[in-house]
Length: 618
Image (cartoon, rainbow, N blue to C red; front, side):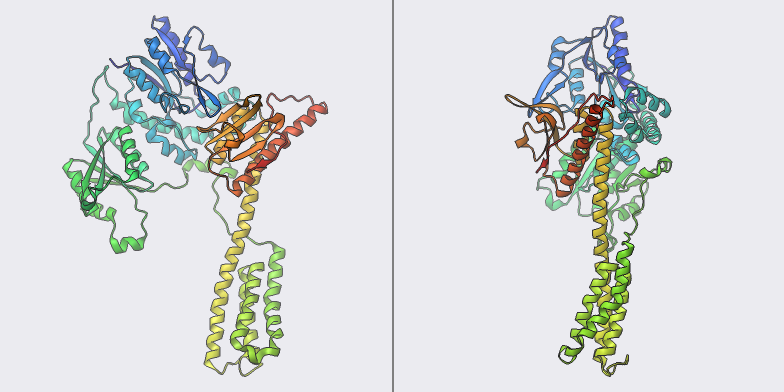
């Protein structure tokens, strides 16, 4: 007989899910239930750790991966112990490589299949169908998710919630100084917490009908079917998530359909389809494949055959010209849909929400403005726009007979390019006009007048004007782009130093530092290595693939005490390497400053030591 799942669903980290989970364990134990703690993430907080008193804790299983050791839930030991109830915290956690399962929710499923009741906890942001909305509305990506079907199968769901201000006050008490301010200004802004609470209410409303009335009771569906079109576009996962939400809200069955050309049915499925089929299964839907030359007609025929009420499509990324030549599948579906309700899901855009109006000015998205050139440089450009064409045409006068009008125009064009490089489009336009008049005055017959007798000379002057304007626009754009890139690099380095300054000013642990590095530079693994007699030992590691030794890393930084910071992943670009040097350099400066204060009697003691000394190598 399958075990029962009791799920604590929290609106955000810090609302008290772990405390509620442990309190439920103590309550069950007091009633005579055989309860063990499979895993509880106390984060060394005194009030949370106190909740373990009186409960049996199954020791974590050490998992070694590339020189680092991790503690994961020991599923085998729990199955051998076979308690009546096991407490499992943070269901969305990704297990270390080499564990029994890749995800902790898979550990929970195995325990349930073995007949063990499970009490677990989960944040609403980690539900698979809501993860993309959380990223879009808050701007914070969600990397670890749990299929909605797992939460839907829970026999009991308790919501753990706090209003934004209460949660923020609690975080200031449980987070170390410096870290709390950083968190409150980032993910835990009042607007983000409000969005998460709204998503929680939405999910509970839409999924309440899926809860069975008793153990093993089947799930009932009140609606018909909702069809989601599967394509190779980047937005396909987003389409499936939206379709799953529609299906949950109406009690309908989710069906994903892939339309294949009849001539390609014998060919293997495209690589992207396997991933979408897995996601569809996790969302509780079924897969279907149909053949058809006309994709729109095949989709509608399948929808009607399934007696489906709604069809979900993704907005096309094709250009208007392509759609004019070959037609639009969406337009044809909408025109021929009849009673079928068609939903078109727009492509993902950068996070924009009404709540961004409440954010501080520094964190609001700003419209990129045209880069302005320095005033001194612009002034030099205006001077060159007049002097350079006049000087070029005057210097070439002794060879006017052999040079001809074409040669004079080409040489004058160089002065236009020079003015564009220095002063931008305005001086370059003036240089074009000045050069046009100077060449006309000195090199077209009759000489020393602005009258042109020969039509061929007029054509040459006109072509010069067109080419001059075109060149000045292109060169101006390139010059401003180069200046913009330089400024962006300097801004990125300043931000890297600012982040390092915030980390160093607080009481961040080595684990916090390596995790910040991994997330900032999107690396596969970061590890802080200590030299030992037998090689290297990991002091702190982050990511699924931290290097075991400096030689295994693509980028290393030597720190104080012989320690080495090693980074694994794709080889860092020159820009990333420069930012990383700025990051670690600021950490080194902060550490040296604190040491000087201690030497000078400042009386300030840091509990953790950050990196100092050493150079970065790649």
